[in-house]
Image (cartoon, rainbow, N blue to C red; front, side, top):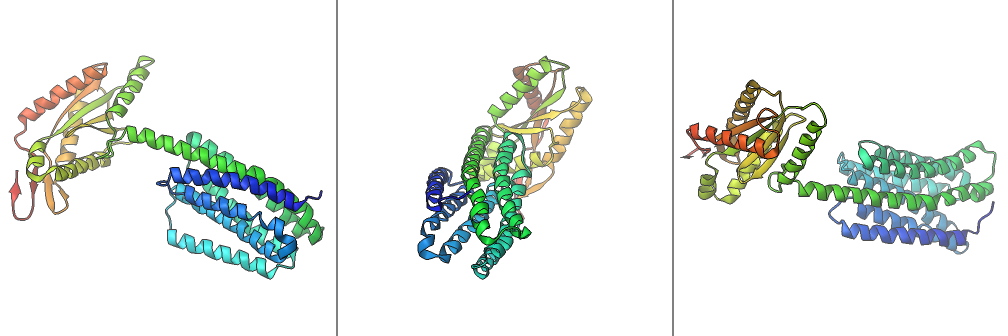
Length: 390
């Protein structure tokens, strides 16, 4: 089969221009996200790689050089964009050096084998296949849910391109066809895969970015911006899920613990609200570091925190839990140059023994927290080497 390459170049250029515009707008809308900007650049580089198809009669072998720059440059940029988007932070500087070295090796092969298409395909297509395998691997690891399904579809587009380059490489390796045949029939196969590949990976990444954005919005709406803990909205949704699940089967016990920092208002009044915020963040960090994998910490408001903890439904478990939390939180710690010794009041309630609704559980836990507060004999203390401040 023979193709009119200038016509094919126009088709691919149109597709490339469309995907480039989409990715540029996507990058501008999501400038805070790493990855989309590099994908937009990759799409632009890929698009300009189709231009030499028109100019080959006029510029000769320069068209081959430009097309190869586009091919390797596009894949390396896509790989780097995916690594950044998926937050693979390992060896950033060394990674860029390796990518540059790979690019130079590829272009050296292109230059050396400029007059020998078969030799060029044997080396360059192999190098492209390696990059494609790395991209596919990075796409398929460390994912879950719907995001994993979309990554799998994107990986499928790269498998399609991998198959095309592998086919051309195997034909060049076999020696059963001459260079002219490879340039026509085998290159035709690759060109036919470029349109679904360009559209597939572009729109797949658009969907992935949309999923990431929706997840970020969902998470932001349910996180306390100061401490990073969950907030009331998340807590009420989780309560609804847990209590609803218990209505449909065997009731699974869990504990609700309310924690109040004693003397926090005095800290704000004497040290300022900025330091008070640091105290809250320190308390949140301590809670996060000592929670079990199925437990959750919520900032309820002000200096109050709520914990949802899986626990056996009995009084002994409740008392043990309170003692453990007091010990963890009241162990001396530091904030900058200051020593910090928390004093906390804790009240907890067990489901279903102490209540079977959100309001019932919170009321019981709140009443017990204030009972605990009345028997505490000190406030949270902050000190440095020279003075003690109560």
